[in-house]
Image (cartoon, rainbow, N blue to C red; front, side, top):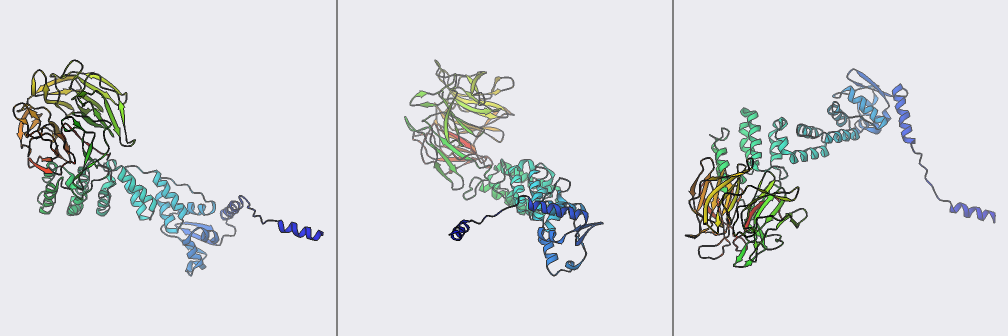
Length: 569
């Protein structure tokens, strides 16, 4: 019976694995002491003028380089002393200590030599430590050198991190001399990336010119190879015309043709995507489809496909409202809804994808206009309690969410335009219920907090669009008592304080939505001379001083607002 019981107990016993914590580390620590005292060492590594007594078994276990040397058929297998070339004795000492301890100290003074030695001798963990150290040191002044170092030693992760850093911080990197050390293929590769963080393609072009001019005798011939890295068709034609006169371009027929082709193709960029960082969309918002048929619709223009598409809707319909963009937030201000003048302000943040109410206007309401100046939103004109037309101006601080009054305009205005130019706000045209249609112009100086009168337009006009382009103000379309809907366009030169007539639009537009997009003026929708609502769109090229039809919107409307926004909403 006892025997059976013993057999049963033994059968119930389970296998158990025991791990001696710290044993392996203790073993390596003992090996390290033996190496330091020179005991049981079986090979000498000669590096420069220094000799290192080490154990082959440790080297073979730590490095495929030494494994191949001592386990294969290489002559070093049988040598008592082996010469190691191309590495410093300091790096070798650090790597040998690493073999025995698993610890290594990387500094900015030793990292390059250490990385070279670790890569050459196959110490992958030490190489990864160097790579990790360099990733933490990236800054605009060294990131290109680190990228080149990573490429030299096939550090894939380091190269990826350095490249991402360069593209993300390109504007700062472009200010540093390291960018001039890139070879032509490396430079073109970076400049062609859709992930490069730039505000516009002129920045890319300037980097190309700086790089070439750094060694123009050798590099000028590389311009035809580099120039297409800048998406020239997204540079305004007037700027391209100036570029064509630069010494690097002048006299080269091939380069002149590239610039000329870009000017022709400007804004006809179907199939040519913008960079992610400077991708901006042209939007049209709100307005009326016909009398008292208001809309919450927002459409955007896809310049790749040359078509308009619908996106999110307004929280409520608005006609003749003001729209402005501050930071990454869209603000919709005032306007009217079903005949009621609004003083409400709503903002849309694409990250939260929601409309939010912010502080209401304190005085202005209805057909106000807005512009951003010095990080604040200025709203002017419209109506106010007891007055059909007012001259009030208010300033909104997004940090405090408060409106404060600033100096009133000289003239009461509604249905006018407000434009930022040269750090001044220009109030142009409009309508005053006592004085009628206006042609007057005045500008606001924030430093002195006052308004000064300027030259008047040739035509009185209200319900028009005005925008700043190339240092001028363009007044587009609108309505007056004599001609009804207008097709005329005027340009204001602030240095001469004078207006000149420009080419008229292809058709009259009362209440158009007007904005500058890709260096051209877009005039959208509006009321025709026959009181029909337009869905047509045309754009103005300042180089040729001409208007050209482009794809129409999906909905006809007037009294809408236009804006350009970096985020697709």
